[in-house]
Length: 103
Image (tube, rainbow, N blue to C red):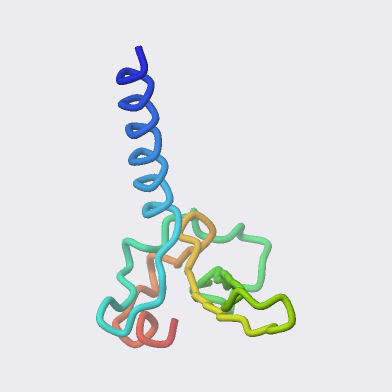
């Protein structure tokens, strides 16, 4: 029974990580944006017609204290910039390499 619980937990962890991969794309100079990353439907017609695409981004921060001395307050910070694919959109009529580079 314990082995079965461990296997099921592992499957949920892998599935959750996979879902997270599809939801967001971490900024990486070696992996530029592709039009397929823009997964939200194009904007509503009553919105600003000059906007051709929108990249919804966010930042993820993490920190941890370094050292064991309670008087020693040194921290290590990590920051990541991510694109939220499900909220990023592009007007199909304007999907050009120049616009993609701009985004």
